[in-house]
Image (cartoon, rainbow, N blue to C red; front, side, top):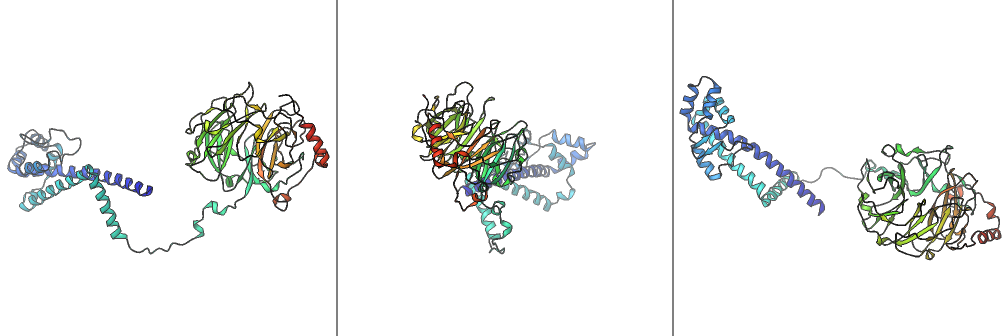
Length: 531
């Protein structure tokens, strides 16, 4: 129905514009014929005027200076309307009046150029018949423009004529052909790790090359980077997904995952500025993998200053090569994360000082792309939001700090309160732990990928991380040298031991040597402090 409505609107516009064009041409021609008909009605006076004039210019001026007997024109125009054949922008004094007919410049010029052969009876009759036919045509064109029912009738008549002329059996054979394949049909669906370095180098590599390790493992290199660069963000996505890429200017760009350069652990990748039409000084701050643009889904934003915003996912379905505005950002603010929601989820925001706030998504109304959002968490001076979680079932919350410590905590320990408050302690950010760098919601079936600022990546099973209360410091997740810090973590589904993860390398840290050692470390690290 929508396609048919759009087609009818299109045909209305086409027929209307064509009718206006035809009406303008018909009126111009009728105006000339009208002048010639008046000249024929006054032929003897016209010939005498031309013979007694010194030049054609003088004859034309004498024609324009007097009123002429309209003859047949009066009766024809009285039946159709005095102004029906008048061209646009014609002086109101030109044409049929109470005292006769006033010729125009164009009519006078045509009378001077008229051949003597037009004075024969047959030629005069042809000229009069053409004028009458044009008046009828003009009335018909005006009816099309003024009567919507007549306009639709014309559209229908033309479609019926098309069916009669071209409605034969199809002679071209339509069949499946490999030439009709889309580029995406040639790309094998595969889960990949997409990484983005601090200086803007992006790449993808199969998630299966990283084998799961015991808690506290040293990991393996995820990227070969220069000393001044480090891996800043990573995402797990499918090669068929689209990456909604949100930048520091509050704009969004679109990039297919398979368009990312496929590079090994020892490669830097490709500058993302070569993959997206970024403006000068614009930097990628958040990336959201999207498989389809559902009408009942929303994009939920969180910024470093604690602002949150919710926008329908369909607002980003129409793609522009130059990008479009995604969120209004203050000059001192930056995107932390964006997530897909169903409109009825719980939202958790985590600040760098370990504070956490949990609130109902419905307390944030849906707004357009250019809106700035509302306050999600009230931050202490110098603190910022580091993670956004959209509740996914009742899985535990895993928090991690910059010195490689973290823990699991039951979701129920994070009370749901209104948005805009300072929240509760999610993890103790002591001198040992450092600041909070991220949080994810996990289940027993999940694994974790941890990334350091030197490009070291470790994959470990979530079930091996100790489960303790909110007001604790946690246990060792990854052992880091003094000059290295944890910068991010991401959740992914566990794979079978016989799957792709077996192709990677495994390193077990001292914590993993015995079960008793792990239990002692968990008991010691998880000792609660006064809240």
